[in-house]
Amino acid sequence: MSNSAPVGVFDSGIGGLTVAQEVIRQLPHESVIYFGDTARVPYGPKSPDTVRRYSREIASFLNEQGVKSIVIACNTATAHALTALRQEMDMPIIGVVEPGARAAVAASKRGHIGVIGTAGTIKSGAYERAIRALEPDIMITVRACPLLVPLVEEGWTEHEATRLVAKEYLQPMIDAEIDTLVLGCTHYPLLKALIADVLGPDVRLIDSAEETAAETARTLATANLAAESDADPTYRFIASDDPLQFLQLGQRFLGGTMEGVEIRTLG
Image (tube, rainbow, N blue to C red; front, side, top):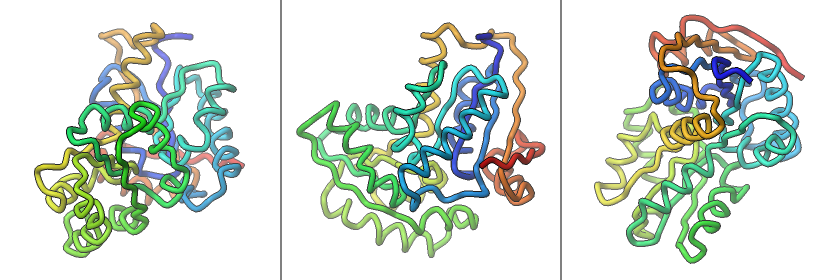
């Protein structure tokens, strides 16, 4: 497998662009193909079997595009499909849960970690399992925050309504005196400043997008798949539906990096 091949990144929609943005920032010589399954978003309320089927279809498509590794930039898909894809694909598969869990355990000073995410991610228990595999006795408080995703996609990242919703969701974390919070949804890094303000300076925020990009860099280096330092990267963005909305929202996420969106329907 060529080290000049692109890295594949996929998500149920646009939230995973926060991961793609970090991959582009931290690995500036790597080419990226991003697939957002906008026709079938959201994954959170869907069954594990359905999420695995969608993930297999996308991974197969990315494999056909010649990627050298795949980043599952979706917490729900990571929770339900990471193990299966690692067993079935002949390339490194990186999820967003394990890097975030490792960073949270390392950052926690008082042994109490909070996790927020979509209903599907929280119900899966993926972060709790990953954290307890590293630190069995640590305290964990979890909360599903389903309203935050549509608020981010509306562009209300600094809106007072979003602050009120976030405060309502985060109050149990404040009451429980967590010292570390995992942003367990790829939309949430866009709310990092607001969430930090609500929680106060004593709570460390773990951005799974940053941690996943760093894990991708380590994985490619270990597998001797990292691009050469003089490589000229290319970026492709593909949606399964409504490319115009994807482009508008994607440019808000990524700025000038996203010049156009291809469309490819799966399933």
